Amino acid sequence: MLTFSNIAGLLLAYLIGSIPSAVWVGITFYGIDVREYGSGNAGATNTFRVLGKKPGIAVLLMDILKGFLAVKVAYILGDYSSDSPEFIDFELALAVCGLMGHIFPVYVGFRGGKGVATMLGILIGVHPQAALVCAVVFLITLILSGYVSLSSMMSGIAFPVTIMVFYSTNSSINIFSLAVALLIIITHQKNLERILNNAETRVKWYPLWKS
Image 1 (cartoon, rainbow, N blue to C red):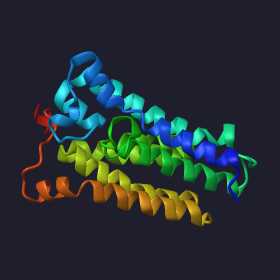
Image 2: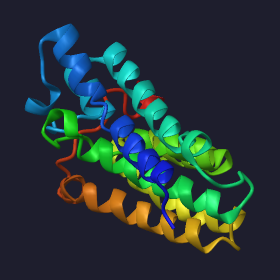
Image 3: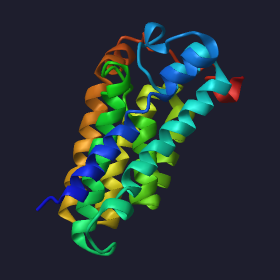
Image 4: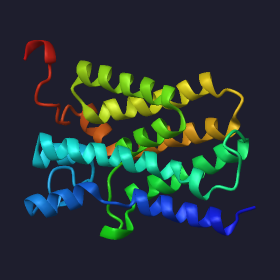
């Protein structure tokens, strides 16, 4: 049963996830709304593409941080013991709210990013081992392919595989991990189409071994 504290926690997680790092950095320091350029997404990847390395790194770190903070709301407004199944379920609910906040941010007309960096922050907060595996998969795929979008999808697929190894007895987190993987793939459908048509942009330094 949801208590007032739980509901307040879910709302807070959404508001944290809604912080539009890319939009605020772009407009405040460059007078540019990154959603009007590049892929049109308010995320770290498009910030790198439109504004460059330094603002891209800043937005990446902020998006990771807000995902991490969203799930840690469970320690402040949760009514459960931290080692209970209910606590994990509440963390996952907070994760969903934080992720939805990033994708549909209330502060800037519900036009956000795809949630990959925020999802990494959530993983660090919920399961650091899975976060490490996903980060390694992302980097390996990026080095081999040069596609950020493909790397995001592959790391998303690695999430449920890793979770089922570490949390095979917890059905809630298994279902959550599968849902997140599906969401990441769905939000990257246009990128996948461009990859198949050889029209997707690769990172500038690809291939690394020839640069």
